[in-house]
Image 1 (cartoon, rainbow, N blue to C red):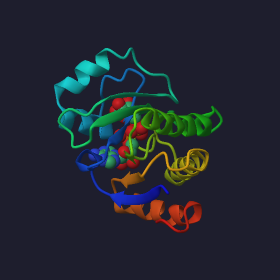
Image 2 (cartoon, helix red, strand yellow):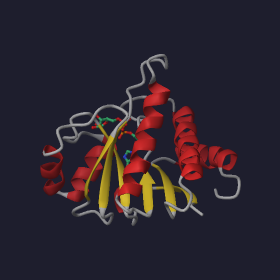
Image 3 (tube, helix red, strand yellow):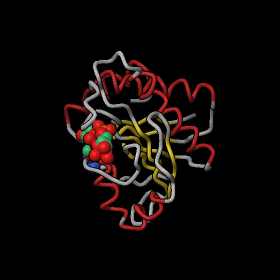
Length: 175
Ligand code: AR6
């Protein structure tokens, strides 16, 4: 059975097989969690990202983790929030679903997600967390035993409390 966890902290320090990056379509770095991941991984990460040819919104690509404790980085591109009527929910669900699919294809057993799109891209936090949790629940139901651990990392206590509250709804026996 897959263990679901919610934790507060800096995703660059988490010891898992893969951490997910909230990237942009260029995959060439940025601010927020993207900047923190590139900073902690070192310049080899950017060098590998340059070979990938970017990534469409809703999709994800994988690299090695270099200086990070995580072996892999899954670079997922969430949507910019534009009011909610431009397919944002679907694109965010796709970013999570494609990250999970890529993880399983690479034999990854443990994966940590930041709250994709909820910073610079302004997606409302509770809706984004609900999409993250419901997409993960669907994936786990369709792929039982594919993953050991999925961790949702929040960067503020307020976000962490929101995750804990919503997690109880989607995974009553976990969080
Ligand atoms: N660990 C965990 N979570 C973090 C960390 C960290 N070290 N740093 C920030 N967060 P954002 P987006 C949280 O803006 O909204 C970049 O420039 C943060 O509190 O990093 O998907 C990219 O290159 C927030 O909840 O990503 C893109 O251009 C969440 O991570 C653009 O920003 C996501 O915030 C992507 O915007």
